[in-house]
Length: 276
Image 1: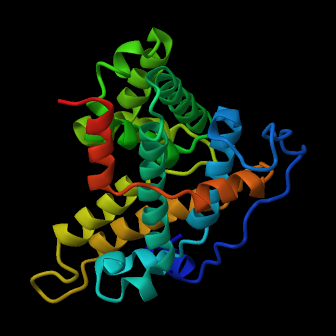
Image 2 (image 1 turned 180 degrees about the horizontal axis):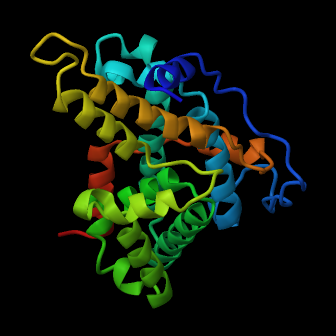
């Protein structure tokens, strides 16, 4: 396939043409104990990871290559040109805020420790589901100052097993050497998967800002165009394989309707739980 054929294929692609025929039924969902008034403590860590993955994949698969061209998700018309990229970013940020809020809303320090351990398990399940983006969302929440600072009342009581799990996940998603460990893991991962969207967008920014669209002689910079096309081709490959999971609207509604704390109120609450 020539470079021109690749670009044409990407621009005309229909990301709705997904592989959704499975050889087996989806795993049986783990239903909450109560159907009315869902309580987070009653939800299975595995099923939470599954439902988060379904929510994120549905947005991820809708991203069209055109949304990723020319840094359009950063421009003035981003809402029109890159709606699904923005949705993906918003979901990532909101999920991290949700984790923070769930933890800070628990005044009892013993129960708060259990919540932290539960979220580490959720992140572990997200990794097993190849949802790197979801895994990073939880790690980002754990690294936020309002959670990270709760060393005396919370982190000192977290079990060694969960701390080991967290350390392994942090090593996987470490930013060292340009996220080298994560990139190697991604190359070895077969779809279905959801990549860490932040790295994908960051790579596109580097390509776009690293060189001009045209050379000094006025000719088109085909090397740059090829780099962009290769990035988009990888994303489309990941989009084509759907997850064989059963949606549970009851749990998804819990996530979508949850009221999260903004940064300032969250930090204030953190100080109330554990004063300086």
